[in-house]
Length: 77
Image (tube, rainbow, N blue to C red; front, side, top):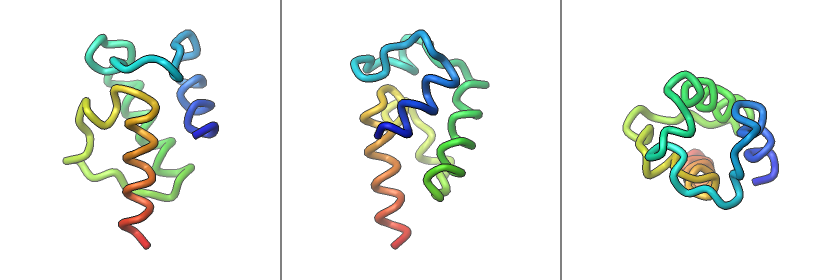
């Protein structure tokens, strides 16, 4: 999770990712940030994020992203 927070802070440093639960819904991350984030997550965590998983529910909070990452890693095993 710490690595995820570091990646998020590189993209948009002024957000409190530990407590924010509306990153997408409140437009805190724009589409370019999300695309960059997806690429970073795929590289860092050795996962492929399917298009169907690119939904607000999976990216509204750091915890939701972490849940997605761990689920995709488990499915890949």
